[in-house]
Length: 198
Image (tube, rainbow, N blue to C red):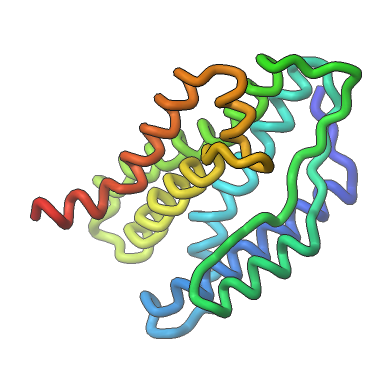
């Protein structure tokens, strides 16, 4: 059974709101400079990606019998706001902390890959939805940002850097890591590839 503590729910909500706010600030140019009205858009497009990514880690860890809890990282939220002011977002709002006597390389790899796979799945869903919502400017914007940001989140988190998911996945299974980061990269690069050919 999955349980959430009160402070865990608080940490997730604060992280989600700050991340939605910083992305809205960076993307304000697409909304005539009004980033406040863009927050609901980024809340759906980015918020789902962030929350489901972290919950995927938590659920997978619990499946293996470990205790897992999301904790906010204040320094990461401040860093996100500072980088947003500079015109880009480096978001590290928090992480799922896992407690257990022994976590095998395979278990750690599977727990780690669950987050990026969730972002890949969300990006695919947003991509499919784009084909059906072209009549609505708002829904097209939500789905376009959802596809773009979730593709980026998947690729970024799969980078083989010590603190990211990619390092643990690579350590567990290099073939799965190559395939997964390859899919994430193609999805992330898709809009640019399309522009090049058209």
